[in-house]
Each structure stands twice: as C-alpha cells, then as structure tokens.
Image (cartoon, rainbow, N blue to C red; front, side, top):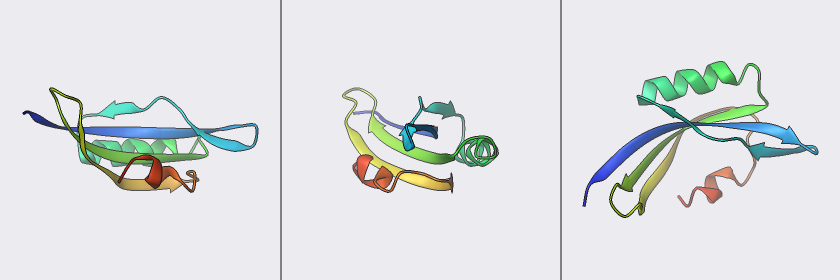
Length: 83
C-alpha cells in the first residue's frame, strides 16, 4: 500500500445561477495550492485548496481536507468530499 498526498485547487463557476465545480488543478505543494486558490478567487466566484490523501495503488481515499476557501463555494462542498 503506497499512500500519496496530492494538493488540488478546485474552482467554481456560475451556471444557471448555481455554483458548479470546474476541473480541479494540481499544485505541487500545500502553500502553492493556497496561493493559487487565493489568486484565482479574484476572477472567479470561488475557489478551494484541497489536500487529498489516497492509496496510490487502489485509489481508495484516506482523507480529504479543505486547506482554504476563497469567495463563494457550494454549501455542501465539504460533505461532497466525503470528509
């Protein structure tokens, strides 16, 4: 079992007056994910920086942590991560 930590930036766009997630972008570090999410929030409705820990072989999710949220994110976003 090989545990891998991945940092992501999740952006959100408005579609029919509802926030919808865009395709997540990889970041090299926790700090990088936070800084990129904060910068992108200036031109998007909302962003979130995430830390995902999963088994690299099976893909089984160990944990998903929201490192930071900027702007508007859906109310149920944290629940949708399975945390």
